[in-house]
Length: 366
Figure 1 (cartoon, rainbow, N blue to C red):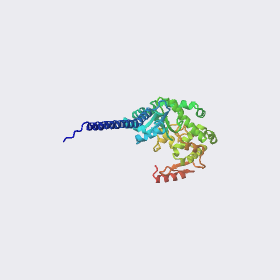
Figure 2 (cartoon, rainbow, N blue to C red):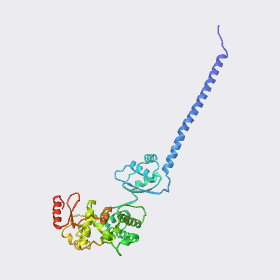
Figure 3 (cartoon, one colour):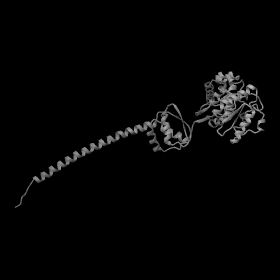
């Protein structure tokens, strides 16, 4: 006997297929929704990140200028930190990403001018092209010629033009104009200490004015203009004397006593007999002065001429200026270096001076 089932098995198959198809549709819709959700979750932050990166790296042209210096051995990370500190770079993370994508330039030591919130591309291009700002450092004891060498290198002008420009600045500044002799032709010593920045396209007249203004600030700090007459000298002569104190004293611990020796010799009408003035007359910045050197015919040779030299012989430090207006009390007329540390011994008589010279020789002082 055969059983024949017509219909039901066919209906069951169809029903199962329909349920499976609905399930697939439900699953597919869910996956599509989840996929879209995942895309949205990823895409929105990514879009925001791209927008942040592009807007940050594009910068905001038109910011104020900023000058930074790159030292020897400084890394790219260090430079980025300095740029961020001064507002050239507004986000260090974005800058590091930019460097990864575009490469690290070969950064040269020197001084650069940037602008606040500058586009990253311009920053890297400027670093890659090298320093674009001239930096001039004036140190205590520098002569005009030594400073002129730096100015020439930074601005490609002649020493003669710099000299004329500095003299013009001296006579333009009301303070220095009032104290310098009429017809001054040597601007020696009329420069203030420190580092000066010469920006691209900046006129050297501005640099010279800054140098004179900084000197005026220093002499006003110590009261040199008001105090000089109490020592029987003019403010310009006091500036000249300060340059001698700088060159002969060298260190702060010597300077007030050196100033006193110079005043004592001037008051007695004695020749100053300072080696530094002979070296200046010879155009030398140091070295041992020989007996033949002492005969050089020059108004700066204080072995031949009584009184102060006609101009300063170098840029004085604030310590030398202060020592000039606040000399130590004493009757000394002589001094000599007696130790390798640069310390000097002071004497009232020539016999004491000879004894001090012997002490210096025993300590290896020529």
